[in-house]
Image 1 (tube, rainbow, N blue to C red):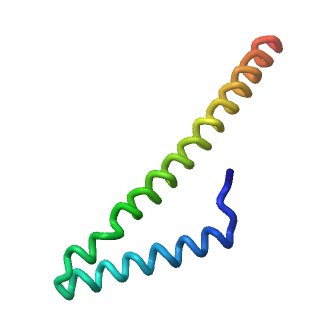
Image 2: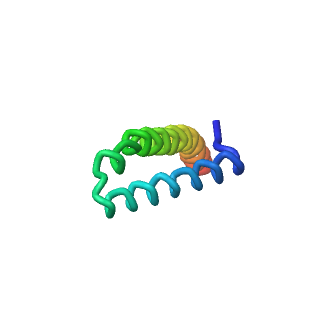
Length: 78
């Protein structure tokens, strides 16, 4: 499942807004208000890394199969 462009843009704008709000809150001395959205940022990060690793592992599995086929073809040619 891939993230569509509109959804990615909305998520990007929302993340920038959350980071800006947290930064401004920290400068104003409102530590609790600044850290309220930290769990959301962690969840987004975990899903992004998990999604990236899933595709990477699937690609590696597909690549391994093709490499083994290529090696077998090369051995057959000699």
